[in-house]
Amino acid sequence: MDAVILAAGKGVRLQPYTLTTPKPLLEVQGRPILDHLLGALPDAIDRIIVVIHHLGEQLEAYLEKQSFFKDWIAVPQGEARGTGDALRRCQNVIRSDRFMVLNGDDLYGHEDLRRLSLVQAGLLVKAVHDPSLWGIAFKNKAGMLDRLEEKPKGLAGPQLANIGAYLFPRKVFEHELQLSPRGEYEITDYVSYLAARLPVEVLETTFWFPIGNVEAWKSAQHLPLPKPRFLAR
Image 1: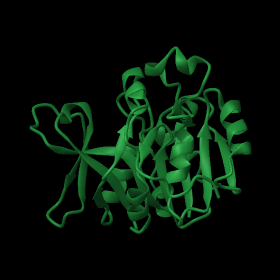
Image 2: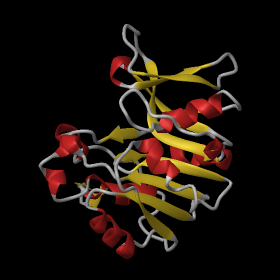
Image 3: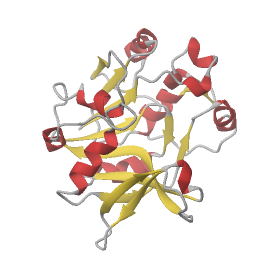
Image 4: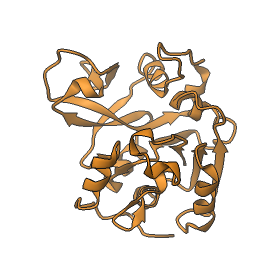
């Protein structure tokens, strides 16, 4: 199975550190964030596709020397037009019938990613007490994904936040993305398309730590991290 890792962002909220280092290569407890992510991937993943843009040459240099995956490819996004556009640019290089998609700047747990790899279509979620700050996943009566709603107002917590970890069937590319109100192509548009046509499983994660700003990055240095699947292949 292929895993697509979205690593093209500029990391604006982590400037000035990300002016010279791409966000996925910022270190947490002595290892790049991307290093933690590769170490958490399940055995089902045998190839990685990394979408790059900002300081992409540094990411390619890291991929050349990492020892987790011999089979990898870097896909330049070019003009940054959203996460949906980043995934869409991988369509012609994805080889597997199902594939995982992950943010390249978050910390995930191996066991959660393993469970995600077993479903036909799904996403990982985390219960949060401040739903107005997150994209929220709502379940239908069957317990599958009904819809996603971005930063809903007036909704009491806890609610299930979409954490940016997906398992897609290849047929997702049948959908033609449209520009969102903020002028980007959103990966959540793909998720909504699938949810209207087939069961999309909603899996609660046991560990997830987003590194969205400098404060979170500093906090991660003292975080009890789950044991990785492996340190290197």
